Image 1: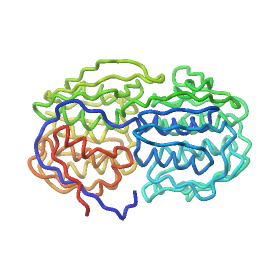
Image 2 (image 1 turned 90 degrees about the horizontal axis):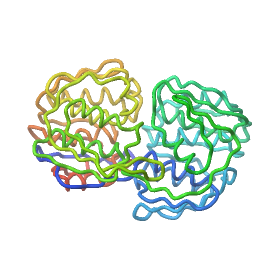
Image 3 (image 1 turned 60 degrees about the vertical axis):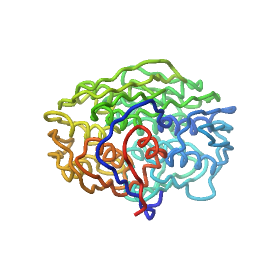
Image 4 (image 1 turned 30 degrees about the vertical axis):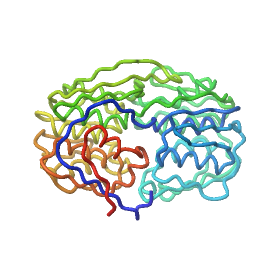
Length: 439
């Protein structure tokens, strides 16, 4: 969303979360359903698609490359696949808004095409580091021009790619996926080893569409030259979006909230593990599989939280959920310490600093460190905080209102539409008093 259109949140203090809600579809899976569905042979029917701006940017980019996509309507999308080599050159630059997933995954996928393309984004995306993907792609034989390692990225035509064996310098599902998608167009085998487990939606969906992927522990390999076969994809509710409601229920007395059909992929459940370590009362029921992805209903009841040292092995499994978890830490008894999370400094904003600054304004002792944060639980007050155009920061400070002593104003919340278009209505339905106002 353009940064000119300012929206702020005004959150009244108090309330509790009750009832049963379903949050929107998983963003990671929504992106991949369009990308892989477009490259598949046949028609892919997607249900539960997240109609947020990030996933819609991916959808628009494939339409611009000649793929017929019907919808979205009520979360349903029909993708008429063109096969691995059926994409056409876009007439203009491909604009991806605020979506880091779109630009990083597309840079891999487009490196193997026989046309040139330029990927651009909004102000926030244009400041995000891209060498983490352009470096391994260059090793494979791609030629990509960047703006000092940042977008726009121009991917030259007709690169002959060769498979590589690549060890990720940091745990990043986006980089892993980018290299694997390029590997489908490379000669030979592409192998990626990660230092810690990251979300594996790409590998699961490739397998579900008939592309052979070999997973051995922390190493993933595939051969170039395969094909994808269309399938039906039911996108589970996004655990990252569910997190705001899980934390809200965990911190507000009298809460009893059930979130339905949430994706509980083992590479994404760090937030459940961390909240349980803090003493949260969380139950899973109706567990099952949809399209190779595990799902469950999650019930959270209020229970007093305690500060913990967050285990470093949980960090990659909860990387997007930390802003909300910092609010849980602010409401917990004692000290919470996070280390090994330097990746948070290069998200849509520097999420460590943004949360530390905002929590301090609200009266919480929060000290940022190079790779994490130290939060001493206390009493959340009132105040005006900055989201830095970051959707997860905005929603995290909104749910802090459940335990606040007074009104919280959160500035620059327009980008919430990138991942959670109906957040305000759903939060009010669950029990938060939240108003969105134009600045």
